[in-house]
Image (cartoon, each protein chain N blue to C red):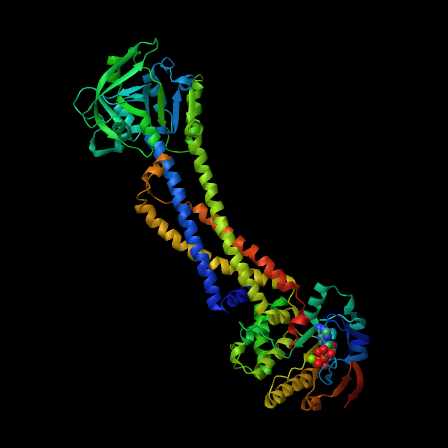
Length: 407
Length: 227
Ligand SMILES: Nc1ncnc2c1ncn2[C@@H]1O[C@H](COP(=O)(O)OP(=O)(O)O)[C@@H](O)[C@H]1O
Ligand SMILES: [Mg+2]
């Protein structure tokens, strides 16, 4: 009965309640949509990074990452990959010879990782082949000799176009120089400009012709593990057989990515809590008005035997309703909009540069986990409860005799 | 049977700059089944006296026993509970919850007492019939006249099966027809069901209906007549 009275009381001053409810609705729509965009962008950045170049697990010689010295390689790469691909949970695996060298054009030279890949398996692990626009060539499908794939950024810096010639140079183990001429057969572009500037791709078979590195070795092995929970078991199985290698999951190797995605989760809640706090003050104000308006009525209720506790509860219920109605409407509208945007994505024209420096896509698919709505519902009710404390205490503290005096 | 006994009751209001000695030593007792008017001019202390008997206000001095219980010794929360179980109240105005229907208003007090839904429903309807509002049970207070609202208040006061009903100027806001009607209903309930009524008034027509008339002036009982 208290609930029903509280609900009916909510609609006594329809306009005033509606204004508060609309404020809560709009505040939450703003908050939820922003949260959805932030979460979507952050999740996309993570997925893009994983799909384009990170992969769930990377394996190196333990010393390789210190200085990228070519002598720190993994032996018997073929057998190694064979072993890994048979582990349960592994979707695909590829190995690269990865050399820190220079890419030179007639006008300029840039330092770059020369990734000598096996295009067949590489395509099952990274999405670089999808990052080549239709007009920008292909992923090693050209007939020409010594094809190379460079990024749009590198192309610009070196003033290169499709089919331009480019000379790759690097230092081998014993400080002898090696190198060769390649032809640009594809120009790619990921959402991470830093990565793009630092990576070019050639075929493993073409590298053999210009380098004295042994066959069947690799510097980097990348593994895709689609199910998050499998990641650690796969890692441990490899570690069991190859205890001397450096085997890192993306969470370990890309500390920044992992942290950014975790931080984003927290940011979203902080952001919403601030919005709810602001709305909470509006609700407190409204409920104080309510309490003042109903002094005589509340006094009568206490006089005839309604306990302070019940009066408190009744006002708390009304306050929760006030916040929850707007909360539910706001969440429904936002969830609807996010569903639509989540399918089609939204664009942020003019902001490409800024976004890409942080590895964010510019076409964002907002998304929020169902968990988010549960937590938010809880926070909205909590807002109602907290906002009711001050007005309800005011109501309970008054003296029924004073309240019902009719003079 | 004595249900209320008041001894040496005093009330001094200290709240404003001046002290007001509103009740100055009242000794009275009330029996089960009385139909009593407390009369006196405005400001004589009727409301103050009734409020103290109803456990709404604390005496400055003196004791009030209801059914042998010294209500001055009850803690605030106990007292609220005591009021709910033992005393029916009818005030001059603001008796009803505006968002509830007549029936729901009567049910409300039984809800506080934890009565079952069925009992609440049946009793509320039968009480509203007794006060002549059988056809208005689903009306909200703002759709009822002042007299009808006071009759709902009487039904509400009866709903908790109290030991007695305190009514502070229940007819003050009513026209003479509604006043007569409300008094008739109260009188009937008193005669037929032995419900104890103690009501204050300064209306001579209301006083006429009472079987016992306690007159207060300046916070003191100046006469106490039983017909
Ligand atoms: N809360 C209060 N503070 C100060 N004086 C009060 C208060 N309530 C009542 N009084 C005074 O006490 C006296 C008795 O008032 P009241 O009991 O209301 O009389 P009645 O009901 O007979 O009109 C009056 O002089 C009134 O002004
Ligand atoms: Mg009075």
